[in-house]
Length: 427
Ligand SMILES: *[C@@H]1O[C@H](CO)[C@@H](O)[C@H](O)[C@H]1NC(C)=O
Ligand SMILES: *[C@@H]1O[C@H](CO)[C@@H](O)[C@H](O)[C@H]1NC(C)=O
Ligand SMILES: *[C@@H]1O[C@H](CO)[C@@H](O)[C@H](O)[C@H]1NC(C)=O
Ligand SMILES: *[C@@H]1O[C@H](CO)[C@@H](O)[C@H](O)[C@H]1NC(C)=O
Image (cartoon, rainbow, N blue to C red; front, top):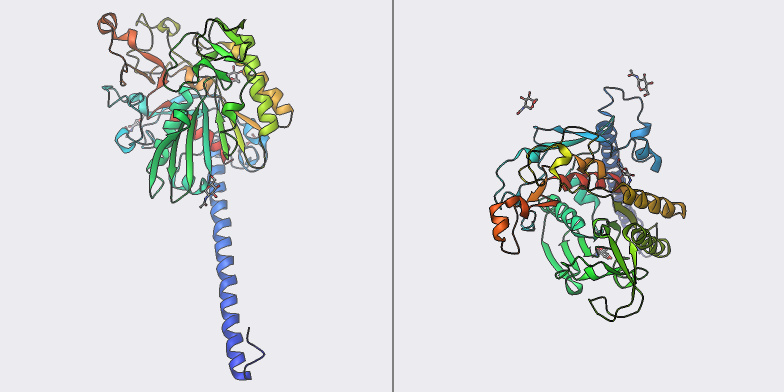
């Protein structure tokens, strides 16, 4: 630069300065890259260590615990098979209700009168290994520039809400919440980090009578079983997609709409009635076909959440409560416990649908939380939430009747689902 026009002395001087700047720049780059690699290594090391902790001081076998090695590594160590242990160290709960301004009234148990607190201190302990503890700062850094999108029913909204609460205090800067698409979409954005964590309401994934985000309290299951594009076109620009769909298919019959007419109750509708198992299979097939043709594995990571327990029969755990999960303050301590509302046939359909999708080359990971929710009869919101409708006289006489035994208190069990999800996102 200007080298040819100058006197020797000045040139040397200039070259030296340029050289210095260049070397300084290189040095900087090297430092940055060293720092980055080192940080990554430290992170990897941490994972390896925490993951192998449970194998009592046997650190020689890091192969199965190294998140970087291969997709089969996490398969070798099954994070979804384990037991609940009381963790009275300070790790749980991951946040307090007051620290999460975005916590929905439907999940804010303590705010709405829950007095016991033991349910906040249980840790999920997989057999023979462990998963990384939630580190908000590190996660926020790694999510920089990413969009997470949860798609599904209110249990996925429960989990989305948990994720926002987990991240809220860890991400510095301006954070906003909003919505769009006529209420179908709920958003959370962290401006400085350019992170979006969104939720899209599509309880049956395919088009259904339940699609209204506000007015879907109907027992009638009417679906357009092959139509998904209307929803799905809003999903494809996400970096990380987390689906669920299970409980809405638990209905004696599902009506498959034949004509192109309105999904709303309409006496002129033509439909075919099928059993819920067949309908679930068909719905997942439509979704799988979409994933196969629209998901770019280089851009998008794909997850499916397993079914969660609904503790609606106290008899299942030999309870004295004649109704459901109302008043429960302890988990079931039998690891093999299975509540009667979790339909194994439906689980097999989910299993085989996802397996088939995988065989086509789509990289989908199931976060199988079925077992770990089975024992947590103490984790539900029951009556400790904002009641949207006044209680009936009968409900007032027996509050158990008004209990929600499907959704979960926050902080609480869904925080663990997210820790497991994050372990897979960043493995
Ligand atoms: C370490 O783990 C390996 C593989 O599981 C096992 O064969 C070996 O006996 C263990 N060593 C010790 C010291 O526990
Ligand atoms: C945690 O629990 C263990 C075992 O139940 C008990 O021995 C210990 O004192 C407890 N620690 C605290 C801080 O409560
Ligand atoms: C923010 O992230 C989105 C992806 O979620 C990306 O498309 C966009 O370019 C990013 N914006 C900035 C300013 O980095
Ligand atoms: C998840 O785990 C449960 C219990 O461990 C199992 O029965 C089920 O088949 C697994 N898969 C799915 C898709 O739920």
